[in-house]
Length: 440
Ligand code: GDP
Ligand code: MG
Image (tube, rainbow, N blue to C red; front, top):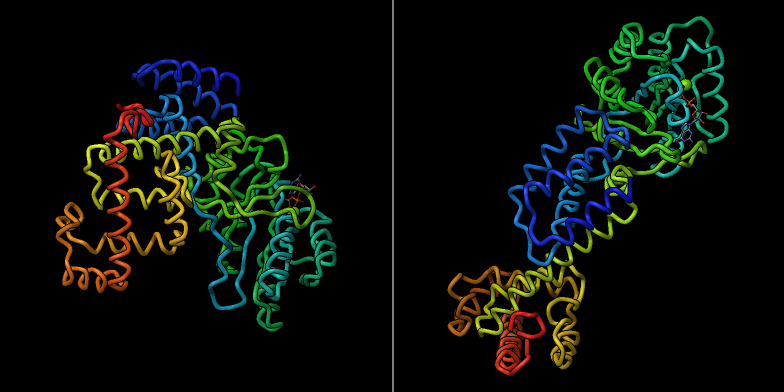
């Protein structure tokens, strides 16, 4: 598969422009990659539609190959769909905060219950009580008790003959009396989603009023992921998803399926049987895994770099014409901030060592770059276009508006002047910027 996708991308690379047929061809491969990663069919359709919409309207930057552009869009949409930020378990409620774990049999509920309890006890210093509401499997409650001992987290004493709802009530009461911060409720699963399971889960939810209801699902879940997630989401107030067995061969397509169907965040992932093998969810990592391309991230980075280079080239062209104004400087500062240093346009221009050293000496760190951007944004449009009109009173106003001092404004204007002068001089000389950027 990897070869197939790369093959298509190479083919796109060799051609000049991105045609509809190219997009279609690339999307066909993307569709296949998603299906092979076990993303549910209906989710695949919605996803590729979204990519197509984005791709059609997208400005294809000259120096980015069409293939890179498509990959970047696919990757971006995938990460967006998976959720851009890691969302933590929410304990923001009056204690004891109940966390209910639901899912099919063998999905990893009990293990994950212990993993989360361990993390909350050790990292967040919470007093945690675990309770097994699994009365179906004979040894289930004992399994949780043993895990509790391993991680030094209390478990609710086992009382024979109680129903899951009775245990839930008892757990909440014990937590209140015992001054616990968190109660983890580990429930019983079934082989398949059925009415009996859903009814039991709904009853427990009504009894314990959990603040978090986490659906635990195996990363290997294939086309079933959609029905599974939908069934639980319809009957319960799901707050998040935990994906287990991400250490296995699964490509993690279930992450996309379940996220797309429920809109609920994937909060954590299980990466092994050991009780500390629980990690934050990183959309970028799963995206790369789903697409099945180890090098996709570098491809995407290359594309992003090229886009920056394209902007840099446009600025250079304006410099050559002597039209480098403060808006251009602002754009350049933005790029420097993003790249995190002096590797922007300046770094690409030979013979600019002296100015680079000056700028370095001026300590162009993030803070300074931000301050300079603030100064420029406190200027009027006219002032940005024609800096020469900025005299004393305007400087005072700009300094006040950007929370800086007049010296800072002066320093910025001086830097701009120096840059503009050097650019102009180089632009006039043969083989200056023009040759450098291939626009002479
Ligand atoms: P439950 O029936 O949903 O409570 O599932 P269990 O927690 O009892 O887990 C079933 C099996 O899956 C056990 O052998 C666990 O050790 C294993 N397991 C759970 N989470 C993971 C994981 O993230 N990675 C791996 N490799 N195994 C896991
Ligand atoms: Mg269990």
